[in-house]
Length: 176
Image 1 (cartoon, rainbow, N blue to C red):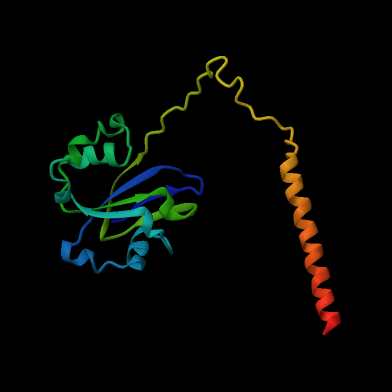
Image 2 (cartoon, rainbow, N blue to C red):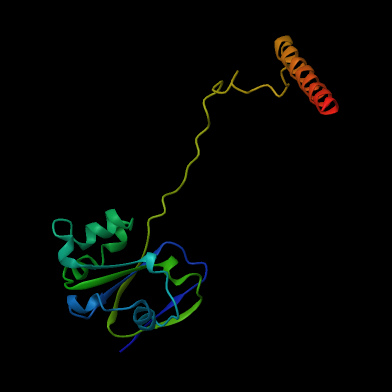
């Protein structure tokens, strides 16, 4: 049996959870191409996928990992909590970015089994007004400062020394 789901090119911050129906020893032999084929795509960004065993989450649990580690809102997981807590074995997390802008209907095949799709929590951004007077006197002037007399004297002296060096060189060249 294959599960199907839609992927859109503009999807953002979605997390898909899959069970991997393979023994732990065979997971290491699962190549990127095999994984892409099981997801029904030609290629994947492997930096956006994570394999792990539910046993690796000892002390935290899958639901808490999804809330704290993946940023999924707790209320999204409320209906699936019991089912997620009962999962065992190997799991695969696939973030939206793994599909690299693909748009289409994907068919998931063995050894993967789709568990659910969850959105990362998008907290509302709020902007507060700056305190009045907070920037007074801190804006730099756009007027360029005139070089000091000492700096100008140094520049003139450097030009004079270069001219003298060139004249001395010319005199030595003519004399030889």
